[in-house]
Image (cartoon, rainbow, N blue to C red; front, side, top):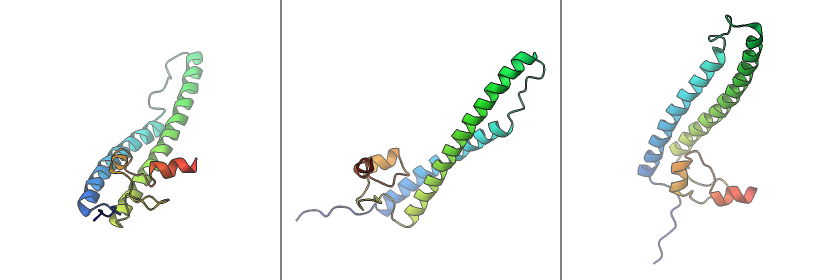
Length: 127
């Protein structure tokens, strides 16, 4: 008799994923807070005591840096939301099921990208 194809992860496996996601979520929130702090405290390391020419150059670099930090912060917030959505899927016991094919996403993929919602094949088919 052929073994039936697994359709969902066990509660033990889901708990393993949940712990992984909680760790990644804590790190992501810490990184986000650090980025937000650099954006909101951009003037704390000012150039008040340097010549006007250097001040203009420094302000230009600071603006670029602030814009880059804002982009990074937005990207980090999206990552945090994706991880939080993955936790909801774990609670619903739908975690690891491809939203396109309905097949189980390989464990190796979920260990690397725990917020994945599609198999590699489904993702590549959309390109």
